[in-house]
Length: 165
Image 1: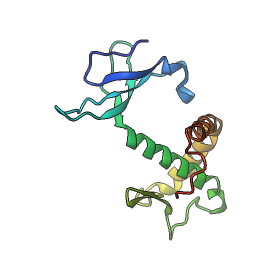
Image 2: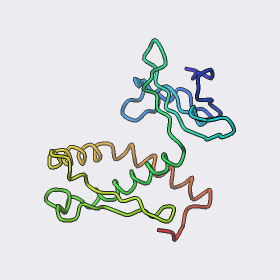
Image 3: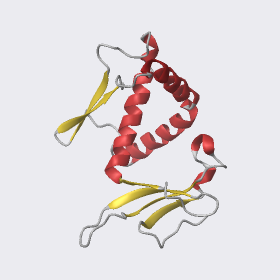
Image 4: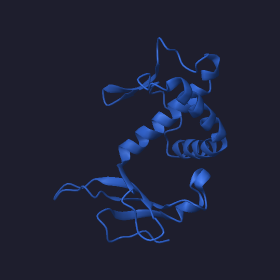
């Protein structure tokens, strides 16, 4: 399915037929495409690039389509990797996290850091973290395939063996 080019987000690079490879939703997803293009929030004289997931309801393009700046996508990838790394060892803790120290990682960015933590404010965290852990394990093959491809591509681009932490 061709993604629209007449809406506010202006696609430049596209992945059409994304629904064929959309994780567990493959072949029955409403996410029909991905694009990198000019952000819909651009003001005159200021241009930002964004990524967009294009959702289609079967009748029209959905308002639930998502648009994110590129740095946030990379931040989400960092969050995903730190989370996956954490849960590889979380089974060692009875509740899958340390109640006294819920922080998982600090990722240095732009002179500060993104702190990754278990959300202890969630009143259902004991149950939810188990469900999350099980779901992450169930999707391990799906995620690992993508992470291996990402690692290969980063190495190919010269980002593979960075000592920056």
